Length: 282
Ligand code: PLP
Figure 1 (cartoon, rainbow, N blue to C red):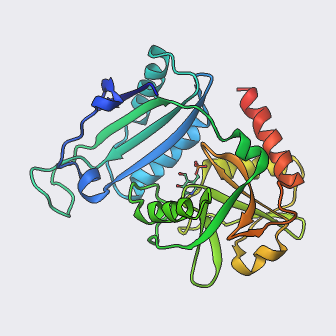
Figure 2: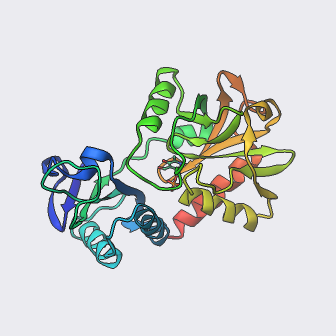
């Protein structure tokens, strides 16, 4: 896949991009990131992603403020290299010091790294047929609302799903509260209402999640920001994942047990159609 990177404004092919070994993103995961989908050369929900990046930066006190410059550089790279269907990955780290210390460097100079990579969307059959997921304990920290690069618990959950032959792992707390996937938000239909976890520090406020909530309200679908629990699953009529690259992905089976009738449900279909219309109108 064709991919070009930018490190502090210097453009190189992604395969040749190099980050200093003392960078705190590498040493401590002291960094935040975003992933944005580009459709037909146009970044989708770019402003929403930049706003979340700003919130993440502020939450961990990385003094990087050049979001206008970042927006310009990303758009320029997309235009100059003619990217059409692509993914933008952005990471801002707290930068490097002369040696490894946990505390912030005396003079912080953040590192701006991003790349744009061609994206071949091979998820369409799964969007049509639905996917299987597993449940997995949530081993993450208390600030999952910050989109930080500390993703070890997410990595382990995603790997457990893969090894179980599933697309995703739904993370749950010891009391059975279902929060979200390792890299996706989660919605369910229970008692005729569309439910998704509220935006507390326990979940990432998904950009696709917010869009789907808006689309659902526009469609007159009853919505409630409320968590589902493991014990609700046998009564759940529909379940689906949302995410920047997943878009809206029906779940037809959890831990080997069917959801609803074991096929994508009508509300999921309506929302998928509304999503598609929005992207087509870009
Ligand atoms: N939840 C988690 C934990 C994620 O990592 C992601 C995306 O990376 C999402 C939800 C979905 O967020 P978005 O819709 O902004 O892609």
